[in-house]
Image (cartoon, rainbow, N blue to C red; front, side):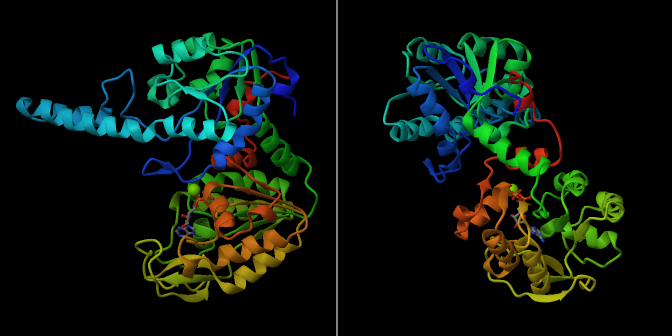
Length: 436
Ligand code: ADP
Ligand code: MG
């Protein structure tokens, strides 16, 4: 990689502001998956061991109504209050604020500080704000090898707005900016890119997680051992269709499954019933099929599909399904998984590959009846000899739940970021760093 990492600069005695991805899932105040914390540990430990003063920051969730500098209500809530008769406004406002305060707890990074402290076996000072008195004191109190964590950066409206004053203040806390948040490397926010882009920090480098993610994925894309197979599925049809064009140029075979397959099937002129379809992308799908032909690449679409009367509710509810040809979905049915012939076809293609990238499940895998296609593909990846890379939160979850995680070469910590890499886009969180 042409970007500097923490290994390329002297960190001893230096204050390092490290943007990590601590956006961990939580339930009832407990962290339910520590993958992201673990992902950041090598960088944090290296900095501690080398006597840096470590200032960690991260966002968590989308707490748009609990901004510390603001009123505590979202724009929409404010409008709703203003629309009420004057005598009811105070009470309504108080209700929203109560909710905001509760949300603030929900979005706080304090539980992460506690857990991180256990994992590191040393104190992690927690600042209850991002750039306020608490953060000032936490940073000022750091000795070499000490660690502090600032509160959720998205409690500041300026985070997503790339506010200059916020960046300047954060820059005043550090000598070196370190980005190790691969999960937000495709975002251009104050702490993910702007702080370095504005030139407020002289030294901006990446941590080990970003370095590793890029090394594996960029290498697979640029110098793949062939045959190179890309597997795309999932539900974010519009987002994901965009990567097809770039991937077609790089890979030998592109496999389409999951929700996005039905837009292709419709583009081919098939009836897709009530399946997930993005009508605005029909032309694009036709262009992609033409592009594949032109480039001599294989573009595989389902030949059969699992269908049901409606989407399972709740998602793992028992469901009655049948199978039909991809060209014969009844008008009142929807496709919720690839069919068994397709699963076999895709699995064989994957098994023969030397490089595979996979983003997006083949069906509604959360439901055991609709998970067969995803399991077949996951199993094929586990058995493939070459490099296997998983991008995408749900694909990663599927592989992990199925017990195949340790059989994969790399499971990316950034769904959106890896997708943008596959798309051939430059990531702001990486572009902003110092060149070697
Ligand atoms: P990832 O997180 O791996 O990038 P997505 O978020 O795009 O993947 O999609 C995952 C979701 O797609 C899953 O919740 C799954 O239930 C859903 N999905 C897969 N196939 C279908 C389908 N045929 N119809 C509707 N939803 C689907
Ligand atoms: Mg997802």
